[in-house]
Length: 287
Image 1 (cartoon, rainbow, N blue to C red):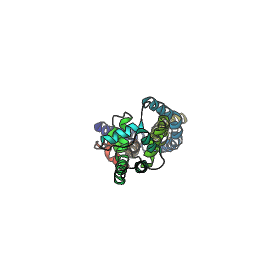
Image 2: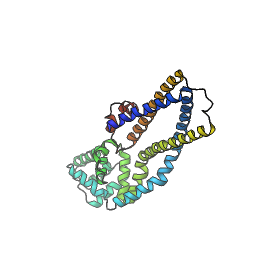
Image 3: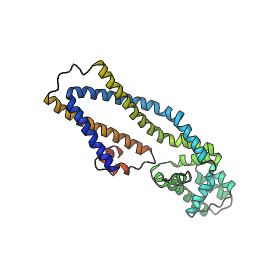
Image 4: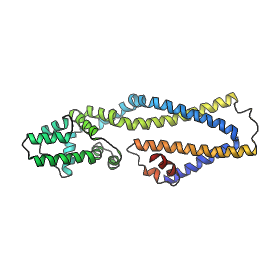
């Protein structure tokens, strides 16, 4: 993939430079101003449309898919099993543990309260609280991704940042009902990630459509027909403008890739950082 990305960079710059040389500076700058206008329109429309597209089209389909995949999912059993695998046994029966997971506030604090009310040793209760806090801070996302059937659960655990409060709310929702938990997951955790992804996909599609419409308008209106013939100096300046436009296109692609990687837990940034040339653009936006 790294070679393909670098080839893409050189191909884009070469094509735009050639077009700039053929058209000349004046014609190319007029088209470039049109491109800038298309970018502005695409930014505005994609920003306005991404939320409705996610909420009305994408989210219901994801929710339906998860309802099928997680039909027999049991959050209490999954957390208990994950903690046991890490060497931590919860000395509560299923009913007590489900109540802990359903209580408001901090789940580790609720566990400690329940253990103390059941007569547990305060030191043991405090120790279990610390271990459960550590689980939610470091391992919960990875374990939840594995339980949901994601192959790259290790990578998701590293890249998805989930606050303790949201993790507790997600567990509480699943402890009440799987459908409620899936709804919370789709509309309160995945919404930010996927809305950003949709925004940039829409931006790319709208930009292409606007560029096509602009080219048709220029052709029909004959905007470029009455400009003077292209001279040698005009061609050289057009070549320079073409190189600049190619660099801007690559930068735009890198910015989109960077934003998508930052908002997406599946795509690994190393896929882009392994290239020699494209990584220079990608890292500029990703840092």
